[in-house]
Amino acid sequence: MFTFGGKASSRIKPKAPEFHTERQATPVASTPLASHPKSTARQSQTPSNGYRKPAPPLRTPTQERLAPPKRKAVRQASPSKPGIHFDSDSEDDFSSPAPDAVEKRVRRGSLDHAEIASRKAFRPFADSSVKLLHAADIKWPVKKLKLSGAGAVSREAITVEVQYPGASLRERYNLVFAKDQINPADEICEIANIVAKVYLRDMEGNPLGNEQEGVLRKLERARNLLCKDDYSKVDERFLAEFKSAVDDYNSKLDELIKNSVLAKNLSSNRIHKGMVAFIVKQVYHRVVSPQVDKIHSKVEDKNNTYGELEPSFVSTIIRETKLKEDDTFIDFGSGVGNVVLQMALEAGCRSWGCEMREVSCDAAEEQKEEFKARCRLWGLRAGSVHLERGDFTENANIKKEMGQADVILVNNEVFGSNLNERLRHTFLDLKDGCRVVSLKSFGTSNEKRNENDVFSQFVIEEKEYFAGDVSWKGQGGTYFIATKDPTGRLAKRMNR
Image 1: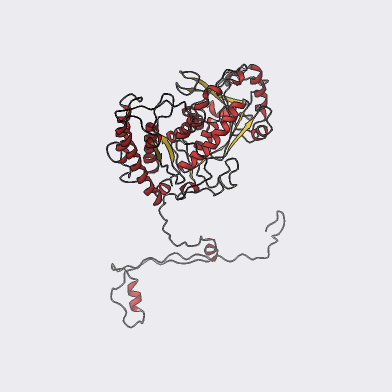
Image 2: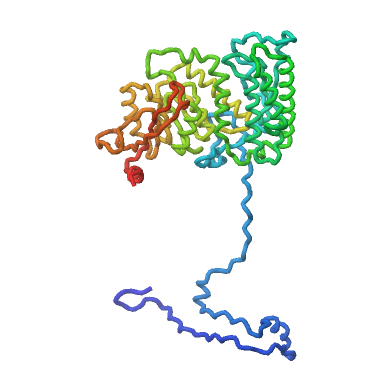
């Protein structure tokens, strides 16, 4: 240690510098010195060309001390394919996931959607806790099925059971065809195709075959024979052939489940958007469709007018907002809960919804239970689902969750000005970076920002949705993503 203006306080005397001389290599005779006991060893150190390798330069003690330690070369193992990740056994409570559930998920990318296989789903025994609404048990106004040639056939004779990737249980279908009902042949074929594309996509020589051969071809052919004529006149022979094709499919899947093939092939932890849409549709058709007239009945308050965002639009919102599995999503005015369920499955996030119409709330609770059973059938683990009743501007749990929300959806297509204004003030309490997705903008464009406007802390982006993305009209339109940005950093980055 040295002090300015005085003598050095250190008692350590500097060591005199050391000098080392390095000799250049010179030619030497190739004949070994036989008289020297180590001549053989010395000869091995001499190159065949007669020149010695120059000795490395000597280093001072200080250089030796400061030199980095020598490391032994270690060969890096090649990256292996990630193994399958299972969630905890305590997955029956959809609203209360295990504390480490987020750590057990794999972050999804911008295009792929991460998902986790369910341990319970792949157990080789039936699970009595699964309360499944079978397609055969839906309370449709079923018309009497007429068969050509052979006459009437009992319901038992035209009932089939279909195996899913999960080993829990099979779903029963009645081969009854009527307007505005689930088409059993179409849905069973779609289930088989999803299994082949999602759960067996990494296998050489798909065990289910394809559209040209194998079990899939047999199912498609039997389905086409059923569909070629009027459903009111179905030939019994075609029904028997379709049932036989379903039996073959079940046998193949049972073998794959027994050998743990499906669980292993789910190790990539990716879930297909088409599969998500199909599962949400399955839930909807079993719970909502039979009571759709009651749910969609006319109401006086236009703020409660019922409308739905289709799965394609929900997938777009997930992509545009970059919603992740460790995020929190809230749907203001969640209706029967379609969006809440899809967000939990496709993004894997904590998904909340709040609805004030009692008839819609009841349907949403039923959908939540059916959704849980469907995830078990498909062997999937979704994020937690939370459904609240009442006014979303006053609900205590929703107010609490708003503080940590990452994405909020407001279908304010028909909201009155008073409700929109209340929401504008409510959004001031959101955390920085939270995105608000709405069908109508809550503020003016970024170029016309008014510092006195309560919504001036948000950067607003206008986006486009397309025909078929919403249920209340056949054409596309615009929607808005408002990101809370009180510092203006996001606005500056967007304007570059």
